[in-house]
Length: 350
Image (tube, rainbow, N blue to C red; front, side, top):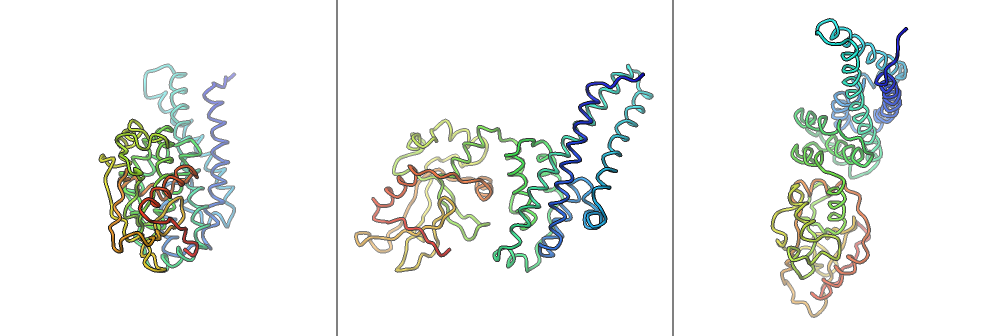
């Protein structure tokens, strides 16, 4: 009589979960083929073929009944794990029960990592499908885009496979979708950086992004992003009342999300309105703003803004972070500009 070990029970549960996640990922990816532009589709197939279970044949398998392939894949996993266990038992001089437990544990680890990747791919596929209807995305993809880089995919796979929380899978899915749409949107360094973030640092970075202003050529090209010191010095805790004291800024700097000078400056004069025209809108809280000068402000006066500047990786990640409203800081920013004879006015036709 054979006795089923706890690890075997656990593996069976993981297998069932893997089947469920694979089905969801397949549904999301399968919906892409008739929605996205050809250059994007080419990158999507390449990425999902490497990252998602059985995705190499999704266009055909999806039409012919992908669920049967999923079941076959699951059965193959079990057979491979079992066969490997028997082979190890035969070739090494250890207790057979120890060998079985070891191979079951290793097999479970592989499947858990694949479940994580399938969930990330589902997020990416869903985002790609939703973005396919946006005119700005369609105009960008009408032209040829470069292929997604193999080394980038390898690094992404390594980091994303370790992420089991919904929050991190969402971020990695957004990164993958952006990279498929526009390769080189995220550097390998940034992918590795976000893979190292703990929940505390991730929450701090979300707060930083929510308080930041930015100067952008477009949504994918951020010239500068920073949290204003509001007339003080962030290194001397001028942002402490808003959740960013000196120690918290040090944590963000240690992870490479902000630069080491906590009170650097940038010229934002191009955000000041000239008549009814704003050369470059200022971005804050995912909205576009213009700075309208009062009669008291000298024409052509430089607008030097000091604060905590995001690093290159920080600016790349700013595009995918969920921004949270902060009424007290918004009021403080408007008051800061008002003291410089500038009114912060939202631009609603962007």
